[in-house]
Amino acid sequence: MYSRRSPTPAGHGTDPSKERSLKRVTFIGSFPAADFRLSPALPEIALLGRSNVGKSSLINALVERKALARTSKQPGKTRDCNVYRVDDRLYLVDLPGYGYARLSHGERRRLTSLMNSVLAERRSLEGAVWLLDIRRDPSEADLAMGERLARRGIPVLVATTKGDKVGWSKRKERLRDILQAVNLPSDQAVVTSAITGEGITDLQEAIFALTEQEGKA
Image (cartoon, helix red, strand yellow):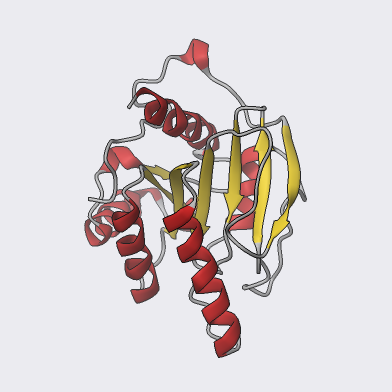
């Protein structure tokens, strides 16, 4: 299992009176190496996934902005760590997408090294939101990322993206198959859609829960 404890998405026991939003968000900057310094020191949550998983669209949905994170029809556009401060409580660290074959060998090595360094070296990293396309079985690159997360030992939440592309009758089957492949339980997963807004509030609450549970450990 890729987590020491299970982050609890909203709708799974969250107190509605304690709901918060990610609307108060500021773009801090893009960093090409893992040793960037952030002030003030706050918990950090990594967002990661394959380069075509819809990460930028999901970030925009999370913070209720149309274009905070740049979206593109061509995957592989994020080449650095894009950092956002949220509600003066935490940082979202948007990592480059992995598994994009059209990059040069040198650039793929650089991005892999950057992601590995962030996951292994940043002590302020308290959790990860791992995006997986609900329509696809986890790829070799996804499974390799799962092993990196397991070695890091931080709490992991799976956000399955593009939920609007799968009919209700197949949702449970697809989610079950994905979670079995990455060896994570259902209470560490949220089905999301940046198009319809499905699961966005649950994911917002789960991100806050990641930092709070780590703080109680």
